[in-house]
Length: 395
Picture 1 (cartoon, rainbow, N blue to C red):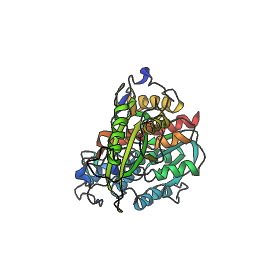
Picture 2 (spheres, rainbow, N blue to C red; picture 1 turned 90 degrees about the horizontal axis):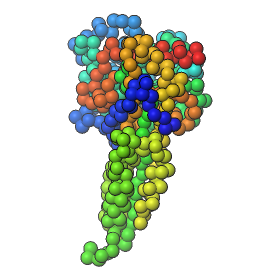
Picture 3 (cartoon, helix red, strand yellow; picture 1 turned 120 degrees about the vertical axis):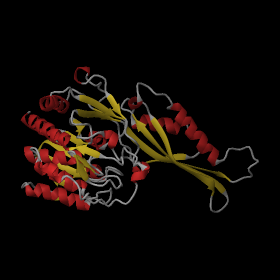
């Protein structure tokens, strides 16, 4: 799993920094404050929709526009799921929405194409200017999702649009528990049409809780609040060493801190919600062991972790992408590692098959108030995905 990025096909790995998630959850981006407004989005009346009828992938462009125009904030993906389902029905594909809200279109399991339907909140008016589509989700990850839907219809491979990636990843967790392992997985997130992501850091979160007897503030004994502060300082100091870039470093983050007398006035209680981003060189258990080893009072209640993942650049999936990107654009593929976490971590933690993450769009625009996607790049990504799926299906 701890394979190095192949220098022959992309040189040193890019560690594209992804911001923390909305609600600081298991997902990978923090919503820009200016974007945290009502999720209702209506298309701009002046949108240059003529651009949707240009090029080879007209149906896919219209799907993308319709999906971006349909609000799909995590927990409220039903309307967008119906739009996606109708696209597969129009192309005579078996499709249904499962009990958690995933859109499932099974077919040839030589490849499973999957990306997420949900977005973070934010009103980014939908419009097309100079061949560029603006709107919430155009990059993260409606663009990758729709490019995969088009490629699945074109090549006859399996497809799932999952829900809840921006919060609890409930769609991905349900998927790995509810279906058999495919031969290969391509997960959809923005990498740029000429890039493919092979690695993500893992995610561990938990809540530290400690109590102590309530006493006069003049007493020298450490109370629960002091214990909580001291515990987190020791843990953060232990991991305060950046190695070869952020990707290989454990990032520690306190999310909330609360403390004070209990309601009955007899004790002091302190709680700290904490998060760790875990590089593939370590396991979740390694980080948990350090955190628990620094305890002198109280304990930590851990949430369900997401393991780190680092795929070899020599898998069939990675090779197929390198060849496809060269075939489509005649450029050298970029092999990437991301400092955040994605549903690929969940798939890799359960399924023992080759996989990668791919999709059009600049990941620096994830959750941004100026989120937008070039339609020509969207078309190129579909071309790449079709080449990859045909190549893997033939193999």
